[in-house]
Image (cartoon, rainbow over all chains, first blue to last red; front, side, top):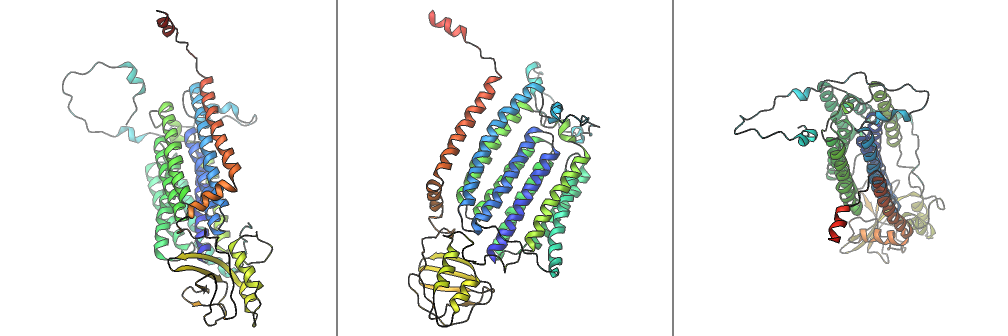
Length: 147
Length: 347
């Protein structure tokens, strides 16, 4: 009885992880986040497999999870290489930039509006500048990340 | 291995089914509220609704045997689910990666809870430690500013609704099927239907093969639900779990095992096998006991004996993937010949 309840709980968690990964994969546009959601689907399956393995006292569940981890690692390596190549061509991680790959009879996707980024207007505390201002470095200006 | 049989029970279980499916639907409504694009108020509402739904799900899922186990399991599972939802809903992809690392830690905890210690550690080391770090490096090279307009916007409203409905259907049907699972029909040792070598199968076969005066062993074999061998400092104990209350009898003496206990439906009631039933069971199948010192050693033995070829192929696959990734990246580069180094050599 307790084994079955443990199995059911684990299957619920595995199914939830899989479904959340599924939703994320379909909703997000960032290539990296889409890949993270694919990995989350694999994790959901792994949780279910380990639960079944324990329920039937069979090592096959854990063995398959081991191979899933291996394949996920290979897939991540190659996917990162491919994503870097794609970003080099287009300039950003948006998968909507590759719309030409869609099916022939579907209309193109156009952004309706960009929501206001309210956090950009937050007032950060600042110190009074002291000393001479350093000369602006043009190379740094390109890649400075915003906090 | 045969899959668990889903028995559709009678209509009186609708309340318990509803009690489990409704939190799932509420949870997916909360997920829909939190997905991008959304504003602060919606996300806060979705967050609160999600936590409440998770609490109700924890309450309506089948109870684990003791409170400590249930507490630990739901804490770890709660962390996993909350982190998974945050992965999907975070606008900044770096935050998504970090939340996913937390979700992986939760999954590793779930693996440890099930006695898959190697997998728990492998998840942390390989997944959270290598794959997520690779993602973060690629993010550093590709999108260093973090937020981007396409992250805040995503595909719009229609794909959001459709995907949430699809996922809610998947998990709803799964919950529906699991909660209606009846304990009675699971694990019926119909001899010949399961693989040989299963420990429970072995015990059931042994029990049914015994001829005793009152014909009780055949009945016991028919009702056998679960067989576990646990090792204690004083010896091995075979726990047998039956579907209904077993036949009450007096204590008996056995070979090869110190003593045998039988659990009825109510675990607080213990009885012993009848006097004239005694049997030997192969006790080598100890991997069911996850507290055993050599539990992972058995896993390693299995990995390198039955699955040796698969392990070697997996290693070759890793090598091929490594070479392939490097080949993809090099193809896009211009290879510069270091002419000045050659000139220096001649001088």
